[in-house]
Length: 493
Image (cartoon, rainbow, N blue to C red):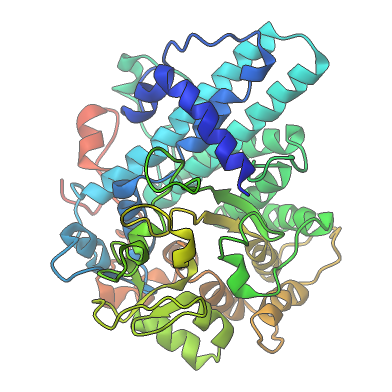
């Protein structure tokens, strides 16, 4: 039972009368007047709850998310119907311009998360002034840490997508926001480190409620951020600390990792919750991530979605040639197949494969119409990623006083063993391939190719141009409203 997700939704329902406008308008808006009673301990979590809620992808956001973060890679194609998603096709073929709506949507989406997190952080400062008990003050610190994890997550994605971006860490006036220059990627990584370091120091190891972000979430996220910053020692140290905790393990059955029953399991470090609350209509804390990838034109209606972001033939061939049968069976959902749960993916579906990692059996899809995947959580950070980050950092030459005692080979082969593969030496090439196989269709591949310097060669056939497409252009819409922003080199505005 998704106790925490239900709790978030209930709390947010109370808040939205005061902050719905804040969550829906442009990121650079000022903080609302909420009427919050900061002296009441029971109110402390409410602003953080709203920050969590801001992470859930709406229908259009979900299409943009999968288009920008995965379709640009060699592992995914546009999918859907041939005539649908023209601007998604631009991302698939690297013909997009700064006016592409999906790129702008991702800028707005992640900055909305930043804005919600900033509101929560500033609210914690007010609670700290108004409450006095030791327990209440501890709760304030922990909630501030959670909000900083959420903000760090959003900024990490903004930096990966756009490189230099504006740093908005507080409520600003419209004048400030209308002329705010971008901070360098290096400066943003330092800022993300600061947020995560504070979260590590104040967040608990676990909560009674499922899904809340803990100190281990912060450690794992910092390890991943450090990997992108090429800070190998920090990446290894943070990943090692998570491993050494003994609190996480790989789920033996790879399919279970992505099942509804497997949500918030022993491998989970960071998820975005989604729940239709068992309803057939009405209001529910739904994330459209799985729905947007559901089989196109399938029947019945609760077994279909928009069909975007489908596995490419290159991914199929890669998994086949390496004998990666376990992960192939989970990652690929072929048309014409009947699943183990008895669901038929019709031959009439327009794409040969769909993303099996978001497959949601019909028994869970209770919505009255097109409710596919509303019970499916987004997996953002898994223990397998921690193991492979650790292996890669060591392979890059990191030297640490390991608390876990793991070698790079041990970390790598723990992941390979779950996939039914023979042990291998932890060379960078092997680790890169392992990441591709393990995280296929999970919005990692494009960024891994860029950060490892492989994108120009691997994606050349899709239209990728070196010294240009490593980042997406700052959206034209954002440059119009913020005169402090500059055109991204290589793009025509």
